[in-house]
Amino acid sequence: MASHDIPIGSTQVSLAQLNERSREIFRQIVESYLATGEPVGSRNISRLITTPLSPASVRNVMSDLEQLGLVYAPHTSAGRLPTELGLRFFVDALMEIGDLSDDDRRGMEAKLAATGKPMDQVLNEASGMLSGLTHAAGVVMTAKANVRLKHIEFVRLEPERALVVMVADDGQVENRIIDVPVGMPTSALTEAANFLNAHVRGRTLAEARAELEKALQQSQAELDQLTQKIVAAGFASWSGGDDDDRKLIVRGHANLLDDLKALEDLERVRLLFDDLETKRGVIDLLGRAEGADGARIFIGSENKLFSLSGSSTIIAPYRDGSGRIIGVIGVIGPTRLNYARVIPMVDYTAKVVSKLIGA
Image 1 (cartoon, rainbow, N blue to C red):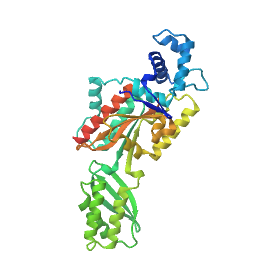
Image 2 (image 1 turned 90 degrees about the vertical axis):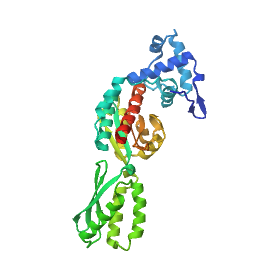
Image 3 (image 1 turned 30 degrees about the horizontal axis):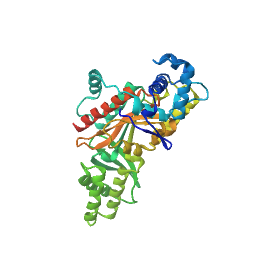
Image 4 (image 1 turned 180 degrees about the vertical axis):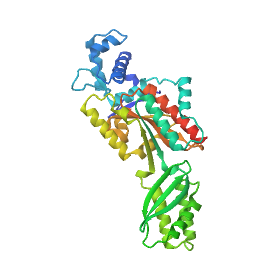
């Protein structure tokens, strides 16, 4: 990856500030953390590095790295761990990203291949595959606004309640309950469904909304007031609020429970589960992935969605047949993910999903 200056407060850290010896020691601290999750001490590092250095000299370099904000000493140990900033610096400036072998690519394509699958199934299988390959949680976030509508139907449940059944052209089905005016005849529900189906089929939510507003103005004389209310309620129930505007699929929650070392780890994962349940910040995450050519990496607090849980997220956008970004796919795991291995996997999965959706 290209190197970047990493802001620390009002200063910057660049590769130029680290000499060969500092880089090697910093790399050992990070790689040891990614492999074990444990702090590494000066004695171990002095045995691992190629340049012969005493533990005392290593400690001096570690102290310099700490002043730069790249490492810190947890209170339980004389060893050092990388800070979030240190991980970011490592990922951007020092890490060499591996490439997938042809066998890896073929295997991933084979797991997802099959024409005619509904989009939900493709996305479910893709997130499950990523979870299995990376031992993290696979995550897919898709903007429901991009789903094209196929059919809407109303089913009377009680005198004042009805079920709206909404089908998208990718096979997704949603059911919502709406209130209906007292005394509304069943014929009004049928008329409302016919009106909606005539104007929304094949359109995205945004397109359907604009078309409906125009059609309602032109058709007010034809539709009685009760039917107009049902049309509005039925469409509003599909549109949902901000929270419903994004669909979230998570596979492999159990992977996040592996390798917990302390109570605070358990609390970290509990917070992450809470975030996943409430979909907090999903829109922000989608927005930040849009416009990216490939995988984006959010480490710890860089990612508002999972900032409290100290997790890392690696995501890449996927596109529809016309090249528009319609969602993101990736993994969520501890900050000690194997970034060099996971990044190309996420990137390639997004490309395969785009191909399947666009086919």
